[in-house]
Amino acid sequence: MALALEGAWAQTSKPATLNEADDYLRKGIAAQQHNDLNEAIDAYRKALAIDPKLAEARANLGAALSAAGQFDAAIEEDTKVLAMAPGNTAVRMNLGLAYYKKGDMENAHAAFAAVHAARPQDVAAAVLLGYTDIKLNKSSEAAAMLTPLEAGHESNMDLEYVLAYALIDNGEATSGLPRMEKVAKATQSADAYFISGTARLHRREFHEARTDLDAAIALHGDFPGLYTMAGQARDALGDTEAAQPAFEEALKADPRDFMANLYLGTMRLNQRDLEKATPMLELALQLQPTSPMARLQMAKLNAMTGKYAEAAKTLEELVKADPNWLDPHIELAPIYYKLHRPDDGQRERDIVAQLEAKQQKAGPPKQ
Image 1 (cartoon, one colour):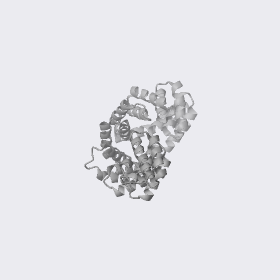
Image 2 (cartoon, rainbow, N blue to C red; image 1 turned 60 degrees about the horizontal axis):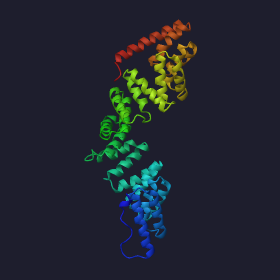
Image 3 (spheres, one colour; image 1 turned 90 degrees about the vertical axis):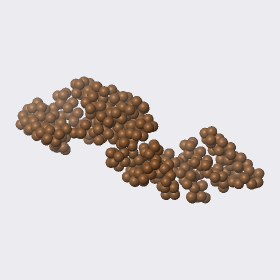
Image 4 (cartoon, helix red, strand yellow; image 1 turned 90 degrees about the horizontal axis):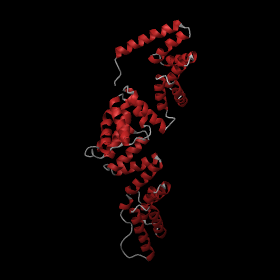
């Protein structure tokens, strides 16, 4: 953007030193256009050493420093330019980008907001402002700002992606998901497929979630967390055979993945492979000691290995916290009988029958 700024120098005759500054400026521009950032930075600094007021050299220096990852230095140069020309939206946009790349979302947001205020129809500036809104947990503001700009820009996939993300994050998945899946198909983006697949998984739309997540795997199999989500979608559809290798891939990428350890450990437990199930379930519980599901599976493991009293204690705590959760009651009934507590066992059987009757009346959950 800085390269498009109007030159701050005239084509009239100048003292030799100023002409030399112009020469360095031109060398810097040529180097920057060829992505030789070190040479460009050096040339711009030489130009500014001769003429500190050469605004184009300073603006370009800021852009080159940012591209080279020297964000603090870029911010310093952009700030100097804006002190002289506060209305320069191109440099303010560069300043926002430097803050964004540095991870300073507050200052990036302020810069992009200023550009958006000056150029409210500038889609690129609005998209960047929307990104920072999302990063700052202001998805509703991003959605409200971007929605009016969508008309006529439906083919702008950057706009559609940020708007879709903001809508999904703001609880408006019905509107956001079609947009995100449009972006995923148009750009073949594993990231977009992952977001839509995850959202559909949370909505219990398991078939659609699996389709999106499998598409993401085909594009970018090592995307962080992807195999874990894909495994959950497959497991929810009852396809344990396909879910198991997905969780195994997840653990290759991150051996301390809580969900992968929990799900795969549970599968091993159901297969009565206690040797493989035990370390996975123990790690899952270590990672999230208060997880009800991790505690339930450990209680089942304890029951299978004869630790009835320990299993009963955990299950009693779970039913106390959530009396309507069916699974702990199911597990408790036989354990009470093994602990020679037949009255408690019969009570749990009665509770199970009552809860199952309620569930049958309510109907199956959405699949």
